Length: 211
Ligand SMILES: Cc1cc2nc3c(=O)[nH]c(=O)nc-3n(C[C@H](O)[C@H](O)[C@H](O)COP(=O)(O)O)c2cc1C
Image 1 (cartoon, rainbow, N blue to C red):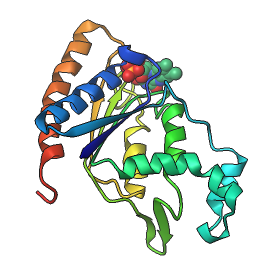
Image 2: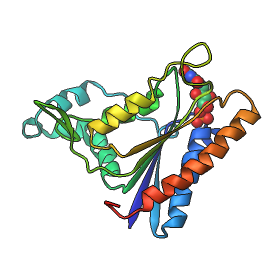
Image 3: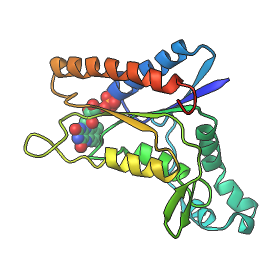
Image 4: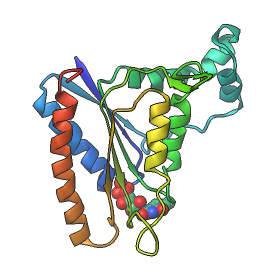
């Protein structure tokens, strides 16, 4: 069985633009490739705690130095990493909050991006330990990205690229839904672009490995 993991971060439930487009993409992939299962990790419905002192201590210890208490502190992180490892395709849908990822998504990242587990440090830099796989991110913004005054800074998409590449996920396509707070016409334009983008993503997600 092949799996698609949809990690969604919007607090806006079914009204969320990013989650809706993420669900449409997941559904289109599942239809194109019967037998695929969609796993949903809704970070708003089930928020993750921020890393606490036990997590920080356990995370800094080499695996052979950890006892049962440290293993317990990392159990949630291990389950989240296992979810990513089991996924053939990853979809991340998120709003932009104050120029970057919402804290709900940052907490997920902090549990998944771990030294000695999903990346290692080498003399030539950090090296990802997860197998690469097609990864699609849908980012929804109220305004426009780009240079001021018309646009605004984007610390989200470069960050997402860097942090996912850190753990080995470099096959990342990002769609930005812009100006979603500027009326139905802007929303319609963004949704039309999303449909075209999703169709191209389905082809990439379902291509045989190495194609
Ligand atoms: C706390 C908060 C911060 C936000 N910060 C930004 C921002 O920096 N730039 C922006 O364009 N929109 C910002 N927005 C608007 C959302 O990005 C926008 O409404 C987006 O379409 C929501 O996506 P969703 O429908 O998937 O939840 C912010 C919204 C909230 C609630």
